[in-house]
Each structure stands twice: as C-alpha cells, then as structure tokens.
Length: 125
Image 1 (cartoon, helix red, strand yellow):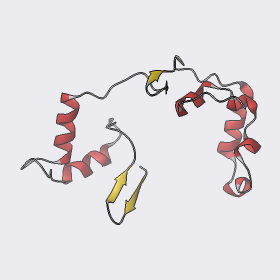
Image 2 (image 1 turned 180 degrees about the horizontal axis):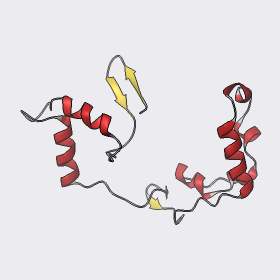
Image 3 (image 1 turned 45 degrees about the horizontal axis):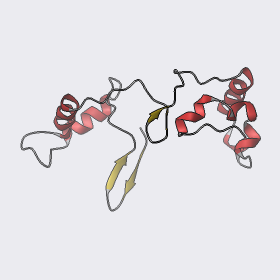
Image 4 (image 1 turned 60 degrees about the horizontal axis):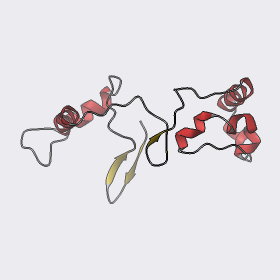
C-alpha cells in the first residue's frame, strides 16, 4: 500500500473507495479506528454503510473532458514495440535509468496508445 505521513494531517492513503477482497490489512486497520461521528462504530462500519448507500462501481476507467467516456473499449492498443519497451523498463535497474528521460525509454509507438487516455488526454508526440 502506498501512502505518506504528514506531521500535520497524519497518515494519508492515496486512492478512492476501492475496498476489494485483497485489502484485508486495510480492513483490519479501519476496523481498529473508532468513528468520530457514530458511537460504538468503526471507520470500517462507516465505509460499509457509505458503500451500501452510494455504491462505488464503474466499468469506465478512461475519461476525457471532465468525466466523459474516452471510448477505449478497455483496450490500450499497445504495439509489439511498445510492449517490448514496457518489459525492458520493468526489467531495467534503477541505476540504468538515472540519467534517462521518458522519451529515451519509450518511442513514439508508446506515446500513441490509448493507455495514455487514462491520463485524461491522448498524446501522440
């Protein structure tokens, strides 16, 4: 799990309301934190009630123009070359990447894919 400790605000966990089956450690943590608003309830209880009241579910993950469907149809349109570049990056050591820019690692093939629509825009350098 990623997160940070901010001395003024405490621990901050990035992300939305996704509490899937594999988040058991987070469930245990939320269960141990008492609610600030409901006596004899935990943060996990409040989380459960919120999801019952306002379910958080969507198959649309790529958006543009402040929430409009990007119509990627769940496809990233990765070329073989772009896939190879991603694998090469995954297998690279940190030292080998220290002086590299993103365009030293990825070619135009990578930048012209729908995967970048997840960043709310389609880029083609």
